[in-house]
Amino acid sequence: MIPLFIGAIPFGLVIGVTIATTSVPNFVGWLSSSLIFAGAAQLAAITLLGAGAPVAAALVAALVINARHLMYSAALVPRFRGQPGWFRRLAPYLLIDQVFALSMVRDDPSAEWRAYYLGAAVFAWVNWQITVAAGILLGPVLPGGLSLEFTVPLLFIGLVVPTLIRRPLVVGAVSAVAVTALLSGLPNRFGMLVGGLVGALVGTLAERFES
Amino acid sequence: MTSALFVFVLAGIGTYAARGSFILVVGDRRLPNGTERFLANIGPSVLAALTTSLLLSDGVGVYVANVAQVSATVAAILVAWRTRNFLWTFAVGLAVLWMVGWLA
Image (tube, rainbow over all chains, first blue to last red; front, side, top):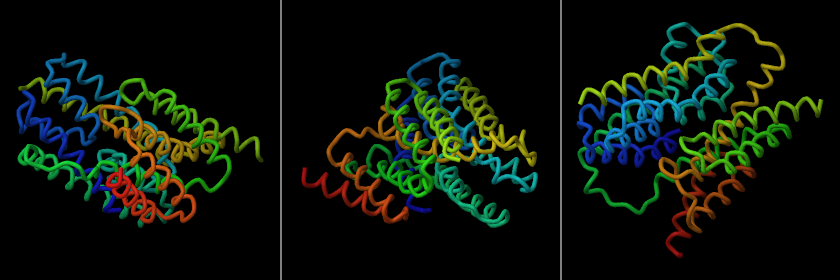
């Protein structure tokens, strides 16, 4: 689980550096990490605000990027059955890409799953606050070249491929990849939204067809 | 700059609403069979779409732009398929990324 968050470190640093170099005040910029807690949306909002874009444009960009979380929420419904109310209200705040990926692939009993989710999510949250702050402070003097940001897609490959245990799931995932790739030119990860939905639909139909 | 804070607060509320939507509204209720099956398919499909989007999209994603990244991606998919172990996938992918990047 820890390697997945190592990949978030360069991303957090990039956001910190961006905050330090735009007109958004450092402290307010850093607060985006706890208020939004979603790297891509933070980066888009900060960049747009720093470039003097209208407030509405920055807000819409952040919300569109985060629309994918609707699908995470839907996918986790079965895992949240029987969970206590406090956890159900707290957990969505912490539901970032990595936490979704880690918790979605686990099928533990309810209490263990909750502990795992919280462990991963709290670790990610603390890591994120520190990394973005470090980016603001140290960003300009950091060396490049390790490509650590590439660890995130690598780990996602390692998480998603083993879940493809039945043919309909493979068919669905391949469709999702194809549609997302075809639409990758669209802004704000729109292609991912369409790809995710098409893949799930194709997978469901394939399952019905097979049975 | 209060307008930035304003954007962050509203974006934070919107993000929480998106993340909490189904978890909070559906709760413990059972859904029709077809919907349940669809939910089971969303997870892997969205994860596959997210990975693709990270690999291909510009701006916030990582470009699969050079031979090292393409080799690492292919190696990771093969290792993940064979071993079904995500640490191996990660280790081999990163090793290929650095080795090919160093040779190229």
